[in-house]
Figure 1 (cartoon, rainbow, N blue to C red):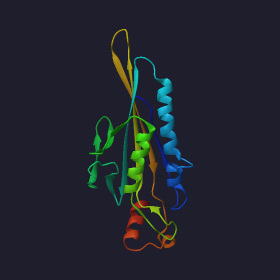
Figure 2 (figure 1 turned 180 degrees about the horizontal axis):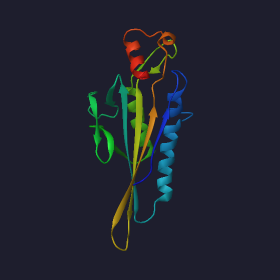
Figure 3 (figure 1 turned 60 degrees about the horizontal axis):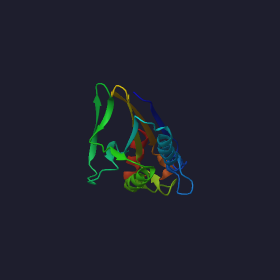
Figure 4 (figure 1 turned 60 degrees about the vertical axis):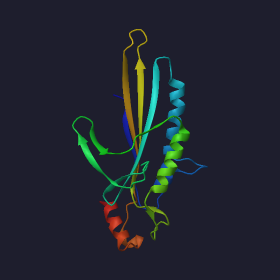
Length: 186
């Protein structure tokens, strides 16, 4: 078993959570910098008899429904959260895409971000109305060259951009925005 970690950005709407996690082209955020470093490190650490594979998934939770942001079919259907008796909770049907470079991840993040649910509120012109979870699964395979046996270490990193916590009066929310805000705060 490898290492598992979760990093999440939490705070009021408009406080810079999405910017901290994603950043911009000029100033990359935590997720792009971490992914770039991950690939640099796998190249540095690679030795004979070792391989590294990287897979990613990207989902949003909007109004209590889970949606795959990397769904190749673009179906936008709600996915079910299930629990495995050994591995714990997982999202049934969530895409796990293999990536070979940081460029692959950059392209997938860009596509996923276009699918995220955003809307204007009085506090933020383009407020994330959903929680987003970007997962990185790193598999390190070691092969004993003398005996031919192999073993794996699997590490999972979850990077979470929570939708902004908010007070309905400050955001000017009504109707659908009010319902979203209620679910975000829940």
